[in-house]
Amino acid sequence: MHDIRAALDRLPRFPLATLPTPLEDLPALTRHLGGPRILMKRDDLTGFALGGNKSRKLEFLVADALRRGCTTLVTAGAAQSNHCRQTAAAAAKAGLACELILGGTPADVNLPSGNLLLDLLFGATLHWTERERRLERMGEVAAALTARGKRPYVIPYGGSNPVGAAGYLLAYLEFVEQCIALHVSPDTVVVASSSGGTQAGMMAGAALAETRAVVRGISIDKGERDPVPFEQELAEIANGALSLLGNPARVSPGDARVEYGYLGGGYGVVGPLEREAITVVARTEGIVLDPVYAGRAMGALIDMIRNARQDLGDTVVFWHTGGSPALFAYASELAPSRTADR
Image (cartoon, rainbow, N blue to C red):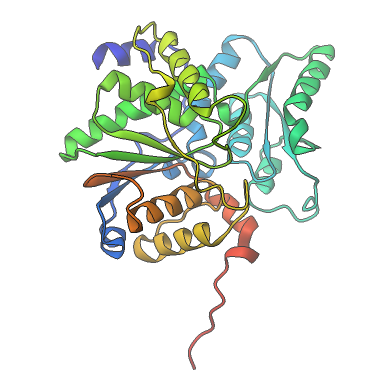
């Protein structure tokens, strides 16, 4: 473990997150579900820009941008993207400009809420486009910046490349050390998975730490029959992160565990699964889940426990990836209709 940390320490890093984040027992939720012991890794408490998993990735991505002499961070996401919010904040802290390509139309531009409000507060320039054109538009914005003498640093969706995944390789080692200190031996780790960098980094960390826990990703928006299998993407990102460390360990697509049965109405669409998960965790543990990632992943975990859909073992860790600012943009879909008793 010491050699691995030494290799990680040699990578450029721009401190952002408050680490380590807690690993907490959830006894009330465990009792409520009557299933295995549930713990939560609280990456909603990374602190920076209201927290979330992207801060860990951005520590390495921003450092790489600064090392290359770049002047502007360019990335893309949905209108309520947690990644875009944290990228905008990281750019501000590092003294860089930030250009965000957001999918959709600026319907709420006169009264922005949630992550969109924070994007503007952090000083990002927003570009709106069709969801399907975000990748193309990133290239166009980067080319325009270059033509004006700027030096753009393009960050893929979710910060999900080997540099960003190094943040979650390190996070997994942090988690293993916490488990040892708490005498906890998890059987399963459940995490929301979309662009893949978080799960891939955890897979790389698990390969190095040689733990028995199964990292199980809950697909938020990718289908089982996508042109490029998601498992292949995860393995490529994980192996890229391992290569950055000069480590010969490798993972294969067969090492990736992904659940595809919880896509609901699509990306960012809140349904009964997410609504119940958010409400149950709030009322049993006083913890806030976001409606897009953690809400859907926790809904999947609740369903798997209730219906014994997977052998999760005796101890499960839910890895909270943050995103609570987005909750306020979904108020009309999530607010309980309750009145005081008279």
